[in-house]
Image (cartoon, rainbow, N blue to C red; front, side):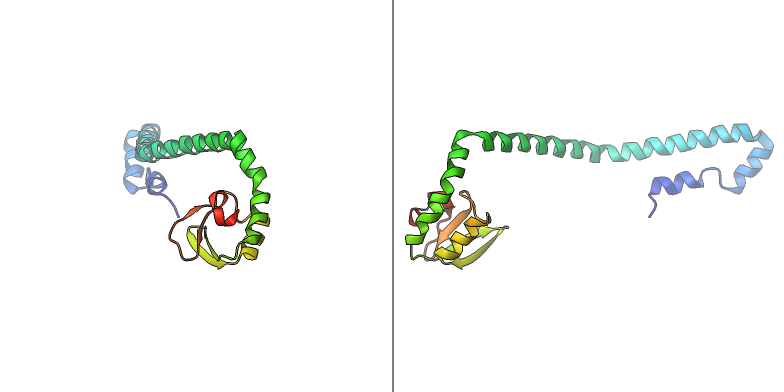
Length: 150
């Protein structure tokens, strides 16, 4: 699929009028006119792309800032402590007889038994910051903050 710019550029100098003009004014002059027309089309195409480039640059900056924030969070002591504490929290839910719902991939999954939740934790599907809800309640809390899971 060709862009509008490419289609217009390909048509520059392709008409019968250019052949006749070339015979009257000379091919060199018509060639310069064609170059100017192609240049005008190129500038118009770049101008049309500018708003999209501004948005793309903004998104790229946001992604870089988010990556930097993520790296800073992951290198923080509190995150490292929580990450190291996760296996203990996983073991503690074995004493609970509750059913749990888990918020994963923008949807609610479950109910899960404590053993199923433990298995999800061991394979890395559930981490300390995954939101969970105890069956019969409507409050969603991070896994590491669930008293019933400790």
